[in-house]
Image 1: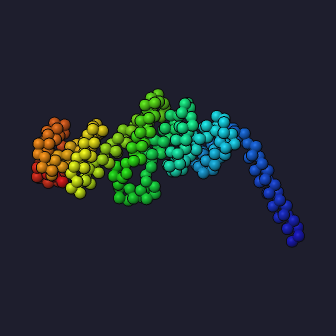
Image 2 (image 1 turned 90 degrees about the vertical axis):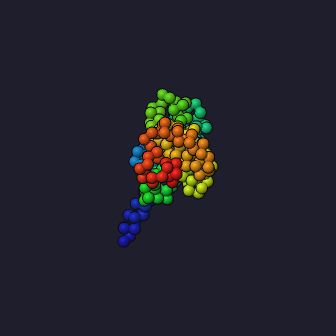
Image 3 (image 1 turned 60 degrees about the vertical axis):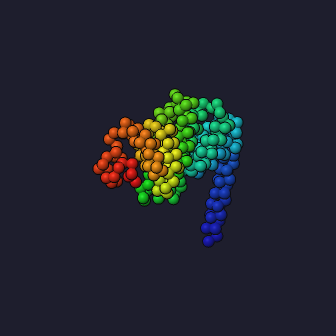
Amino acid sequence: MGRSLILLLTIWLSACSYFKEKEMDDSQWSPNKFYTEAKNELSNQNYAAAIKLFEGLEARYPYGRYAQQAQLEVAYAHYKDQQQASAIAAADRFIQLYPHHPNLDYAYYIKGLANFHDDLGILGFVTSRIIKQDMSERDSKAARESFDNFKELVTRFPKSKYTPDALKRMSHLVNVVARSEIYVARYYMKRKAYVAAVRRAQFVLEEYPQTPSTEEALFIMAKAYDKLGLNDLREDVERVMRRNFPESEYLSDTNPLGRESWWKIW
């Protein structure tokens, strides 16, 4: 019994000595050691641990090149950990502190990605998949901000290695934002707020003229003008629609929404 107690005490003291020594060793880490350990944690998807090490590196060695890179790595780690707001904040901080940094394009790219994948939190994530909700039916604020982030990237850094991917995402996002405006216009139509519906539809035509949503935007305008008794304007929109979308289902007498005049479908 006595020997067992002594053995346990010896093991405990050895462990304390080991961890104390390890802690002292950590305090003596070089910037390269900090960075290497943090990258290892990042590679192993231990994002919280990686962030802690990167932040420790920046705190202990705030003026070296490793500290600057650590800030970018923190933004990336937050993004991978699905902490979109923290990723955006970290990227913004880097952009403000180092506006001429050679990796500034990456900061804008991370901001764009974080906004692109911002799915309104876990509730939005679950809801959208249960009811198969289109991204454009939800708040388009993140989509707009993502588009602006990528636009800043491709405008300022056209030769960046991130630009091709940013352009592809922008092509998707512009359609998302345009569709979101259409959903709002539909809502106004259902509420009989026809002037507001016209304004939303006009906005789509002016800002996103190359998107598929322009077809329905014209239809909504015609329908709203008809409800407002503005027949001349309705006929003008009809002519534009027939010229640009001659095969549109909204112009067909056999459309799935009914056989009445195309502008009276709703």
